[in-house]
Structure formats: C-alpha cells, structure tokens
Image (cartoon, rainbow, N blue to C red; front, side):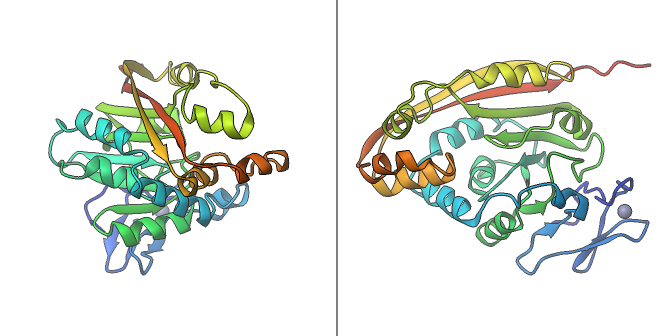
Length: 279
Ligand SMILES: [Zn+2]
C-alpha cells in the first residue's frame, strides 16, 4: 500500500493525518491501525460497526465479481474510464462502496489515476486486495466520516453504492469531481418483469441531484445502456447481487428462468463542488 495517501485517523474527534510505519498506519496522537495480511487497511471504529449490518455478504461480492467477468458492467466501466481519462497524472480517485473492486480497478486501468476503494465490508476489502494488490483498499463506514483529509482528493465515485454529499464536499479539492452512478429506470427491466412482474422503476437520478443541490453543481447527466443475452447462472448472480432476498412467491419464477435478453442501463451524474462562500 502506498505511503503518500492523505488518510485521516478514524478515531472519533481525531481526524489527524495517518503516516505509514512499517506494517501499520499511525497518527500523531498515537492511534494506530495495522495493515491486514492481504494488504487492506481496516479503519472501521466499533461505534461505526455496531449500528449496521456487516456490509455485503460474501455471496453477493462473489456474484458481482462473476458478473463482471462475464461482461456485465463493462459498458459502464468503459464509459467512466473514457470520461475520466483526461485527469492529471497522480489524481486521487476514491470509490465509496467499492465492493469486489472490479469497477474501480477497471475505471483506473490504463490511466494515471491513483485509486482508493472504501467499503464497509472487510470481506469485500479482502477480496479486492487479493485481486488488485496494487490498489489501496480501506474498510470504513462511508456513511459516516470518510477517513481522508480535507480537500485532498480529485475524484469521488459512487457506483450504485453509498452517497455522502457532506463528506464528499469536505474531502474533494475545489477543482475536484463527484461522479454518482445509479440504475436508470429500465435497468434489468426484463429480469424484473420475469421475476417480480413489475415494469420500469422510478427515476432515481432526480433524487440524487436533489441530495447534492446545496454542495454541488450538476455538470452532466449521461445514460449508458446495453442489452446483453445472459445465461441462467448470470441471471441468478444478478438476483443475488442486486435484489436481495426475493420473496417466496417469486421462487417458482426464479426456478423457471432461462436465458434472457437483459437491459443494463445506468445514469451517470457528474458534479463539481459549488464555490465555497467565504464568511
Ligand atoms: Zn488519531
């Protein structure tokens, strides 16, 4: 793991800079965090763990990794990578809810971004650190205080994951960019019709724009859409990775699933920090 990242101590009310000392990171007040054997850094505090579920179950992490390997999500990653290719060498890119790590690794592959993935799940960080040891993986609660110094990162990504406008505004540099990806209304439409009998879902992008209105300006809204024929195994992984715990009444429909042409559709929202008012 790199030693030159703007990591902040996650002990409550501390927030001091962390520096690498052999196999651990420590702040000036003596708080210390050991690197895991597989190379990720666990910064999760007990009070941030207690009130939450443990993060993604292992099965969902593995399902998403298999889907990515089968090509699901590749269009989205390609669109993000193309869009972010012009950023200066060494720009820090943080993903909130990095999960299996495939999206962050794919977005940063072949460009000059320095990636940092944050996930609540130690199992996800472990999985990602083993697959992509050159990247930085942190365990932290992205819903609370991000373990990063003020105005220290160039890019924050939230891909169908956690959002935290206040903390994103704090950690981004004034010229930074926040990219939020949410499913478009017709995402997985055919699969939802087959299993749940439902149609297009609501427009999530409008809600995201509203959440960010006071701290960010929306610069662009882009849709990425592809249709792909998926085998039964991939459809089951999609269900495991996205719609958790399908109801018992849907079990028969799930059992009958065969290959299906499925729409994958995402909305990409590109925000820049609103100019800060001086007091
Ligand atoms: Zn500290």
